[in-house]
Amino acid sequence: MRNLLILYVSTLCIIACSKDRIVYSYVVVKPTIEDSVINEWRPVMRVTYRVGENTVISEVASLVDEYEDCTIKNKNNWQCHYEDGRGKNIFGFNDGEYWQIPRWGDNVRHVSRWEFNVIRCKWFQNDGGMVKV
Image (cartoon, rainbow, N blue to C red; front, side, top):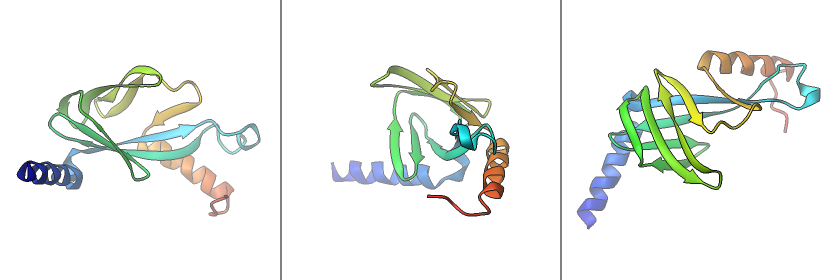
């Protein structure tokens, strides 16, 4: 049992440390009405996905989830299934682009790294380089 635990932790470390199997999703949301003059979207977070042989580990702000019901071709083409309070969900990457079913609605989008950074720059310029709390 101890050897199996060591093997499992070692495998997770190898997957977690290997940059070759990591992809990112960038999330933006609709801002409040008064902030919408800056940009129609506000940057929220980058989600890291570590793609293994049969599992995917997601990380957002140090919160980690492991998905085991996955079909994986490579790091840019995979999908995972899971159930939560909303019911059955499926998400993944197709040719390097993130997708999910069901969607979060019209107020949340997953965008490219380029678009995420352009949006971040607009908010950064507006806030004078300061993070408003």
